[in-house]
Image (tube, rainbow, N blue to C red; front, side):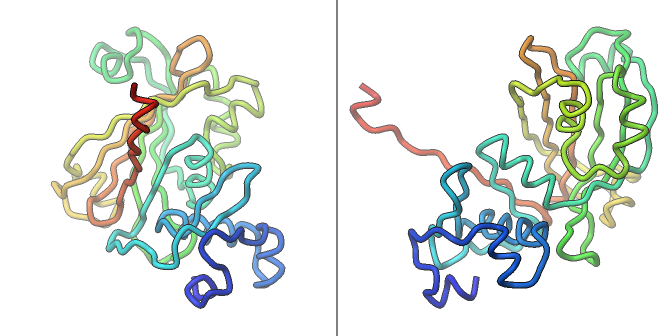
Length: 238
């Protein structure tokens, strides 16, 4: 950020690669990746696969939230997962009753593995957790998750794709206001009833079946969710 503000990397310039930055600053590539994600979330840089990392502004957007997330592509979500740490708290096999089936938008009786976890920042070990997540994963992958998920740094969908070849074709996301229950508030070092954002993501395969559904609760003072909406040109609208 100091180099960008000082003009070493001007607006429009491409930054060095992650490997080059790691060597220049004598840090690991994971540290570089996390730092670049923070700059991206502040709007300072943009990142596109095959096009590099471009400087967009020398003045970051100001935010008091502990984590600022801007997601526009599946790759952005993967970078978020890589820049934070998942800590698994519990796992349990469940069979969807009518209420859970309605929440998961599946048929009653379907088997799932329910995983409860928190996400923490890899940049500040003293910071309060970013969110609580309830993950419901197709029961066919329960054994895999119990064995490999606790030490796995990337997304659950990436683990399933690596080991079983089932790919995510689409992520369907909804966001709503919610309050923290006592159990969740305790895990997040917050107060019961505190306002939060609940983000639901359904990971859908090419056949249209959701095989992972996650419900993440983010305390309102620790998380900002950003998106950019661009007007199409008049000719495109016509």
